[in-house]
Each structure stands twice: as C-alpha cells, then as structure tokens.
Image (tube, rainbow, N blue to C red; front, side, top):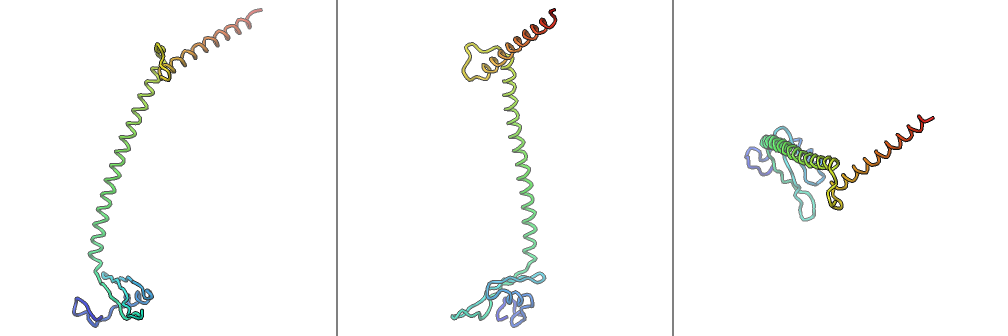
Length: 157
C-alpha cells in the first residue's frame, strides 16, 4: 500500500483475499472480504490503457451488519403492519360485499312473496319476481288439475 488513512498500513501487505479478488477481476472493479473487513477496488489505468495500480476502499463489516439487522427488523415490522392492515381492509370489504348481497337476496325473497306492483315498472326486480311467482303458481295449478284428471281416469271403470 502506498497510501492509507492509518499510517501503520502504508507499505503493508494488502492480504491474500484482496490479491485473489484483484487477480479474478481481470482489470475490472472488484470486491473482497476477509473477517470483519471488506474492500472494493477499481483499477487505475495509464494513457495506454494499462493497469498501473488499484484504488481500494476498505470498510468494516460490523457497522454494515448492524445496520442490516436494524433494517431487517424495521422491514419485518412494516411488513407485519402492512399484512395486518391488508387483512383488516379485506375483512371490511368482504363484510360490505356480504351485506350488499344479503340485502339483495332479502329484496328478492320479499319480491317473490309480494303481489306485483300496479302498474309494474319494466325491469323492476319486484315486478319480475312477482310475475314469475304468479306464473309458477298458475303452472302448479294446471299440473295439479292434470294430475287430478289422470287420477280420475285411472280410477274410472
């Protein structure tokens, strides 16, 4: 090393992990870590494009790991909060849909048992349901009469 913010590192060995990362980089940017330290390096090129050195930034992993753990806890807390809020929102929407459906079914049930409105509005649920109920009742009366007629013929000599 030719320069360092720590005097004792000047002219010191860069370490095997850093040298191996430099060799693997093939004159590109590189990253290496060993123990609680990590380094990022960029090659320095001369006017002819030849690599004449490396600029290396060394940093400690302890602070990074501490901030990663804090971020993970923060992310997990927000994730749990968002999941709970989404579940509550989904519950509220489903309750609203269920209530709307139950109201419509109640109106349909009432329309089936009510007399048709006079005059019947075209396309109204009450009018159509009442007319359907009357048509079904008329069809049932005709079926009952036909069944009674068949039964009378079957019992006649």
